[in-house]
Length: 204
Length: 163
Image (spheres, one colour):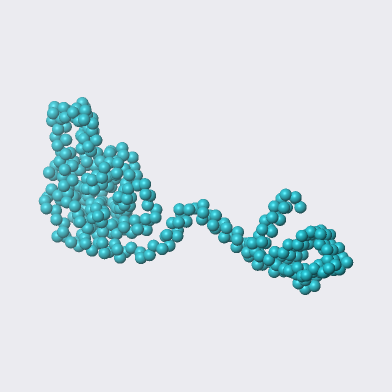
């Protein structure tokens, strides 16, 4: 065995990391190489001296100092740690909040009367009231937002009233399609969604 | 109790009681603040030792380099490195080094280069295994081994002629 290999073995041995077979070889080498033996003794002594250093105990008042330095409350971190642990749910929740608030604000903003339909020529508007006059015929659907509707004549399509009422139909009235009244945000939401998909399906 | 173990670690690393106390306090503060980031797959002792060791290493790096305590300083006539060490006069009588031998070992450890010092202290004074040291310092076991060997040789050379 060469001396440089022996030194490596010495360190591994002191680490408790040398195989039994190698230890025997090292032992053999140390018995016939005085300089390596001296070196091993010196390393072994260093090891045991370092291990024998007394343990320094922390001063008693250190515990108090540490306890005083710790912040009192840990409340906020419970919330943030939940967010950190569930990123997908948090993102979905934020998305829902943003979507809902935008829908609600859009629903609240539109307080103005608006009418839509393919044939508005014969429709009469009085203040907040939309009237289909007697003897007149409106072809196609009619949608009224933020207003009441009175139908005296003919309506050749669906009638949709959002945030408003349909006043009692006159005997002369005739509505070919169905009448829908929407006055809540949720219904309005569904109306938006279904009309959106209707647009997709029929392209109109 | 971690307090004493960490204090012992920090004291051997920094060779200064005041700094050791600061390191222990800072370690507990960081543990407390980052408890929710603690990875449960690793041992708690590994984590707390890592925080403490890193704080010690940071402090040693921030110090002005003192290359050799035995060399006379060029700025201050007649003063050697020992005279320029931060004085530790809080409780001088508690430095109960019973023998010249203990003082020599203490000084030998104090002069170890930082990268060997942390490994040697964790190995000999905290009795961590090579694998545990590798986990604490986040380096391969082979590197830890090499550093233990070099550190041991360093100490041997320091102490050889004095003992």
